[in-house]
Length: 257
Image (tube, rainbow, N blue to C red; front, side, top):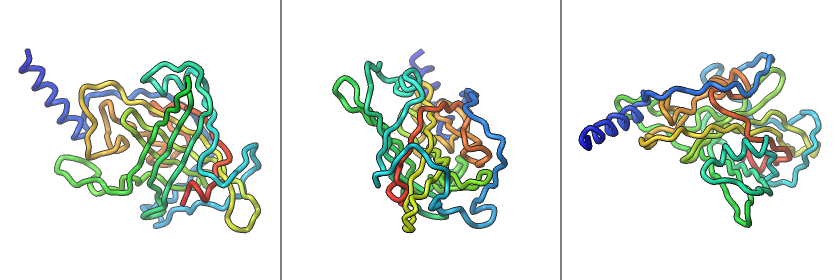
């Protein structure tokens, strides 16, 4: 029996590395929008919209020039599900920090941090999208693709919006910017508002492939692919992602460098 288990674990690990594991995606519709979407991608017309100066509607948020702002969870229950690793008592002081750099083809790499305070301790989740490319390996898909390939501004209806993938060891998030508000200072100042969606990985004895982020894994417990993020067909992801919360007042120039 010990020999059998060892072989089984080896086979499961091999499936995970090849992106052909036997897991099943949990479909969960988290948002919809009937607006038409125009994808402006390097593969379509050779350009990607830059971060807009903004002419969006006013918002209750205000900017302080910082890339850290208050984060408003959808609910205590949803935030507890996101944390998952330990029970929450009376969390407070929720914060979101966005630190992104524009790199090749107008796409962004960097990190998104979600923090909170509970029972006198501060907790922080750091989600990342690296600046490199996928390693070329026989048997794997998406060789030499940018790790941050899906992180860019695009036209959705009449607005320029943003969606991007990030992950840590426990799961993935999608950062969405749905409005850019101009400060009217003539210097490109302004702030953005949006939301964060999350998807925790399923429990597994098999470790995630070190060669691919979850958005390049097509099945199994580490699959976080969502067509809305990959194809920019909608602003809000489905495919197992749930809305974690919202933010406003995030200084665009500080968050998107």
